[in-house]
Image (cartoon, rainbow, N blue to C red; front, side, top):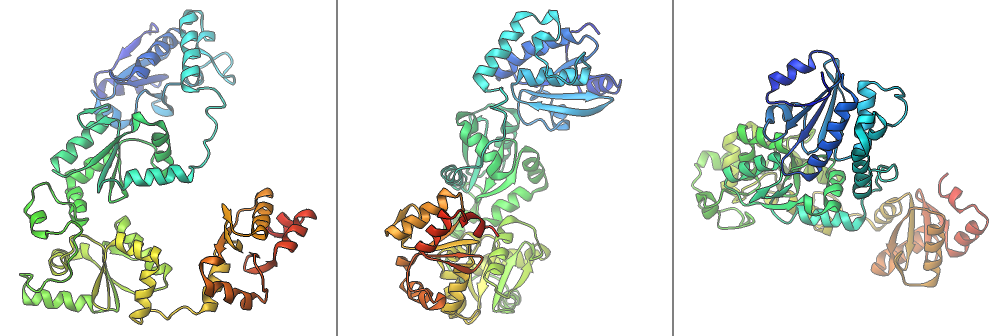
Length: 492
């Protein structure tokens, strides 16, 4: 080896080099990526510093077989191989980290110390040093910038959720549909076009806050990311597999997303799939009778994918979780086990997607509607009206509120806008000590306000509870704070 960089043109060629057992560094790059071009300068200088190591480049989008074998989803991307095995990787343009990792894999006089490219050999010269400095300045490749990122703010969470929900099918990609900036994004665009569905997109290269935030929000570290009705389906590999198996078309169809111009879309005549049970369905008497029997086989009946203990889709899982939270006894039917029921029920109920929830024979809706009804309290109201669950007593309601948070404050107003001085003082005392707490505005519910006075035998507000036990009102909380006992009292 002479210390030069070799461009790899096939998986077979790469396999022949890696099986030698020697140290191999692979740089995955793309012609449109400026960071790749700049990192290539560093890569070239490092190859001179380590002449006994193989330095290889792979054009990621031109060599999909190699890229997929190493799970490459962005560029620049570096893979470090030794003894035929991948021992490390590096994503992004970080010359200092690249040099350090190269030194560890290839061997260095001082392997325990971080390496800077210009210090690894005279051949590196000042050019690469300037590159490192420039990258450190532009991309924050300092120690501080690489420290763990804080959690997502509520504002960012809301923004991400709004983006995800902005279209029934939403793709977060690099570039736009007319000009994708990576091959993986291009593949998913091609798949969606082949499925002939409408979809929205967001260019994550245009907004780094969204780009980094979405990785944490979805717990999915790469792009593109494909969502259907707010639920993450996956990245490029998953989209390809689902498309090839026909599952993607099935998922879209089951969530009421029809192909553009399809006959089924025209026949449904309803964007939301609503409309109740039709009188003339065109179904056979035998199938109609069977569907009615299934729907009425339990007061609460859920037609879903999979079973409650093992849902086969996130939407079905959501409805199961809601029913369990509401402590509702229910039966279910796995529509994946019976295609006749699966297709017939769509026609019978005039509802094109799953899951479908029925209460006393009446269609309530799918996951979005059930979730919205739970949030608004309407679901509980219907369950009570239909005799499915007993109406919660005031005492049960108060117990539930008191234990809804380990530290629970019943106050006038909210922590951000207290409606009395005593409530404000308690809020400030808790915040000063860094105590996390839940709150309830007693001005918003007169029944709770009056009931809690009797329940706690405490006639005034605010009232502070810890693990269901009353601590006291404003005077007691301030006394505990002044004595240095507040935080310990609320953490025992």
